[in-house]
Length: 180
Image (cartoon, rainbow, N blue to C red; front, side, top):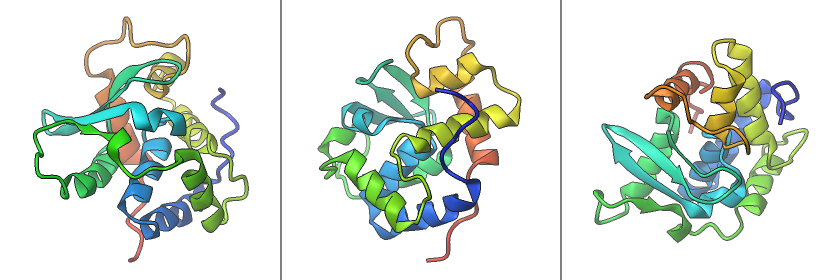
């Protein structure tokens, strides 16, 4: 993974978010997890989300580098929408229990509906990596640890490193809400 080629133009993001929103709550969550938390589509089913000190955190149990990260509030809003339908809000939300038949196919369909020029499913996480890199305030180790890139873990990073990244995502990478 690099921090240069992202595969998604920032101008495509509003249409991408609208297409996901129009696809329903699960589709919206799927896009936000890949675009604003950097999860691989194949990691979503093995992810457990739960609230911690007023924020949503995700424990990614599968993939190349299991990790626990604080999520951007924009991702938390999509989790809140799903959580509103549950009876036990204090229990962790196991994303594998959601009706996500094939996350990669659903994500690709959203990208096609949004007319994204390069509708490759990993381009959402590449976009996040590139945009975080362009901010110029994070080390490659922090960005890659957040994304779960193999060989880059959180060992040696200070407490709260992931919340700092989530806050940067909310402050700099989340476009204004789309019109309904």
